Image 1: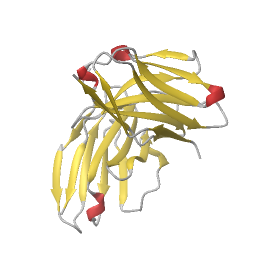
Image 2: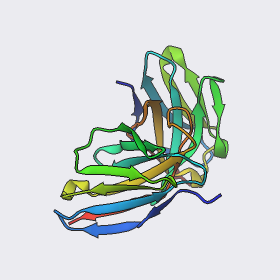
Image 3: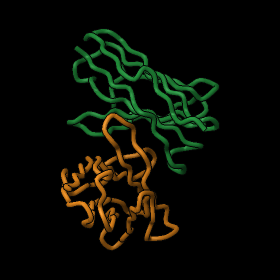
Length: 114
Length: 110
C-alpha cells in the first residue's frame, strides 16, 4: 500500500497570504489528523477528521481550519499567515479514531512564511 | 491534563552501547503510549506502542520499552546502538488526541 502523501512538500508564502495543504491517507484509512511541528513548541495537535467530520481540535486560532472529503483526503487551510506559522505540518492517517488505532505519518509540508 | 515528559533533550552514546531514552507520563488511568522516531526531513515512524496487553513491548529495529505503572514511566531501550539509530525520538500518549513529548535527539558516536 502507498503511504500517506502530502503536497506540496515545501512552500514559501508571505505574511498575510493564505495557504492550503493537502493530505492523502493510506487507502482504507478514514481518520486524518494534522500536527504542527516547530523547534520552539514541538509537535502540537491541530485537528482530527473522521468520515468528513471534525472529531477533535487542538488549541489553535480560527485561522487554522481543515476539512475532509468523502474519499478521506484532507486539506488544511491557514489564513492571514503570520511569521510564527512557519513550521513542518504533518498529516497522519489511521483506520479509525486515533484513540484506538495507530497513526501513520506523511513526510510533512514545510511552510516558510516571510 | 494528560501529558508526557521526556527527560533529556539530547542523548549521546557510543556505537554498541546501551540506548536509554526516558519518558514519564501523567495519567490517572492506564494510557495508550507510543514511541516514534523521526529522521531528518521525514515524518514520524512508529517504533512501538503500549496498549495494556503486556508491560514489555518490543518494537522495530531492536527497540523495546517497559511500562511501569508504579513509576509512571515508559522508557525506550536498545541493547546496542547503531549509527543508523541517530534521530529524534518522541514519546506520545493518547487520551482523545495524541500528545507528544518534547523529543530526545539521539547521537551515536563511532
